[in-house]
Image (cartoon, rainbow, N blue to C red):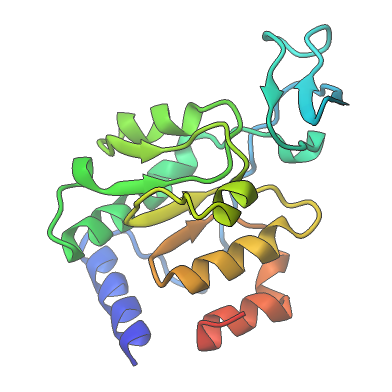
Length: 193
């Protein structure tokens, strides 16, 4: 199938860059960098991070946040997918700097800095409610979705559904238990959810 062909091409591309590891080797899983614990409060349909506990100014979000979900992704995670993003750019005849990357889940905006430092200059990551943006049909134009989504509630399942319906490439940083979930297996096997 077309999906299998693209996966095979990607594996071959990465192999030529000496980046593919033996599948029998143990996987070194990156942990998300945690900020200091902070409390979240809900005021007037916006969530604030408590300045007295966090190291920075109070952040207001136009959506509900959960403390354990609100973590910036370290640059090493983006370095790990840099070649894959370069491959995606090459498949649509773009330079990495022109590849349109969309991250629908905003934390503090560091992911834009991280990707730009790796040469990906066209990154969309704004402090907006992803679900509201979908409902209003205002998803920005993009070539590939890259995100470390919130793991609480049904965020991952909703995101997998969005990704498979989009018919565009996506890279998600997810806990390993997700691959055993029925919704994920359905998405991978048949591209549906």
